[in-house]
Length: 215
Ligand SMILES: Nc1ncnc2c1ncn2[C@@H]1O[C@H](COP(=O)(O)OP(=O)(O)OP(=O)(O)O)[C@@H](O)[C@H]1O
Ligand SMILES: Nc1ccn([C@@H]2O[C@H](COP(=O)(O)O)[C@@H](O)[C@H]2O)c(=O)n1
Ligand SMILES: [Mg+2]
Image 1 (cartoon, rainbow, N blue to C red):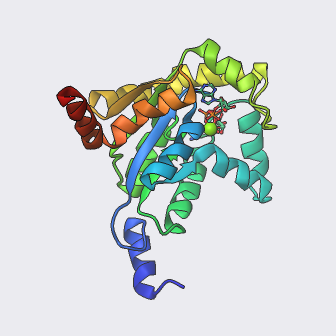
Image 2: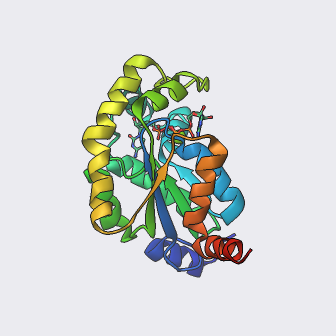
């Protein structure tokens, strides 16, 4: 059980340790492979994965008063008001013992970005951006078979439009700040992860490259 001091620290900074958490935003179009790659990053680098979409879907299942509104937004591929999503993210961070997080599928638009920055005062360490052509993303989503209500061609098209119009500008915002690490995502899962690994462990990768050069 947390102490009064832990509770006060959470209130101010977001984690029980009193430190601001390290946050990496994981962005990319629908079906670009964000969730798949996050699972590997968790395994290799000890981050906690928080998917904004998963948190919203769990909120629907919990029978929350916002459930119907969220469900309708997701069916239409629309972006849920930041206030709702940020509360869910903050709670997930506070309830977790870890101090480093992959926030997947957030910020999805300028409103998400600005509100998160204002409320949490957290700046992402960097933004991992999975770049994938639309035809490949469409193929993956139509083959995903996880029973998601938004994995149908009509909603997929709406999600692509929202990605281009609202989410890409957020990536461009971070690009201008030198924070984007672009990953070529239209490759087999293992090959994509090789590229991701180089972002998370640049020193280790350098050692590998150097030792190859010597050989
Ligand atoms: N590199 C890849 N090559 C082929 N299939 C992939 C690759 N990465 C992921 N997939 C598959 O594509 C589908 C979508 O992947 P995933 O759920 O990771 O995407 P996402 O970016 O999280 O999508 P969303 O934004 O809809 O949550 C899954 O069925 C997954 O197994
Ligand atoms: N910041 C966010 C993230 C997601 N949504 C809604 O959830 C849908 C599914 O998201 P995935 O990341 O799991 O694909 C998305 O299309 C939005 O409707 C959101 O509103 N805000
Ligand atoms: Mg996902």
